[in-house]
Length: 199
Image (cartoon, rainbow, N blue to C red; front, side):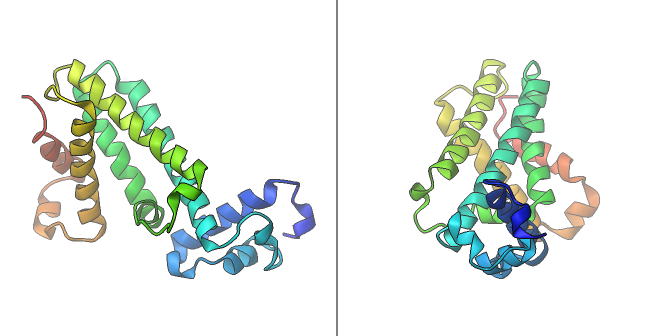
């Protein structure tokens, strides 16, 4: 694609999408401004009109990842908000499905690779709204007597830690093979979340 085909603002999105494709297929070490520019079909200097360096591109990709995750969880909440027990399970399952479908993006989002994340307000906003959505899920589950009462944020951290740790072990192939052969992944998730439920 020739660079003169991009309208104002389209180039930034094209570079982000090219970066996400490289990340998905080759991993974060292969992702540079130059490789993103090459994949987008523009000159190697073109990205600098939108990204100061690789860190800025990584922040933009992570932001898109969090926005995607937020959208998926929001859809889940809308579907299951009247059934708190299902909501807890399905929110965790949504998180896992995202991680499994976009493992490199998922790992990037939680890698701490950004040296100064507060320099990227769009990234911080995406992170915060996604976390707040999890807190909202916990509130619904507490009101439905599915999760024990107590500070919502403490409960949110507990739920998040269980689900995130669970899927991270899965992605790193650290869960025992004999267990995965015996149980479906969602069944294992349900059993894991029972540790936090009231009954």
